[in-house]
Length: 90
Image (cartoon, rainbow, N blue to C red):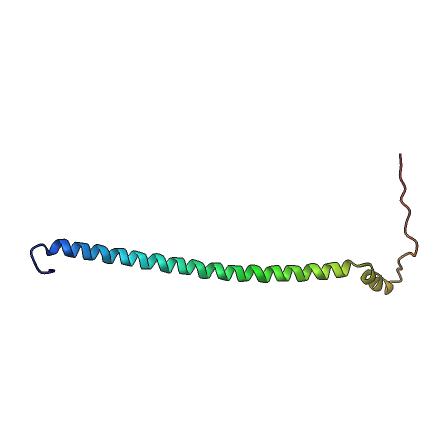
């Protein structure tokens, strides 16, 4: 079949199929590379989100009145017992 007079047609078809197979393998490798890249970036995003949540928790803890009062005691600043009055101007 491959050495007959019409062999050129068969060889052209075989080479065409081989070319398509090479293109298919290259596209598959490209897609796999992108999947791995996306997975790495998702892991980075998760780590950054975790760090953000931790930093926000620490900030909220530092902003609490009890924490502030403890830190201000060293500087002889106390929080008043009575809250301030609101003045409304009409």
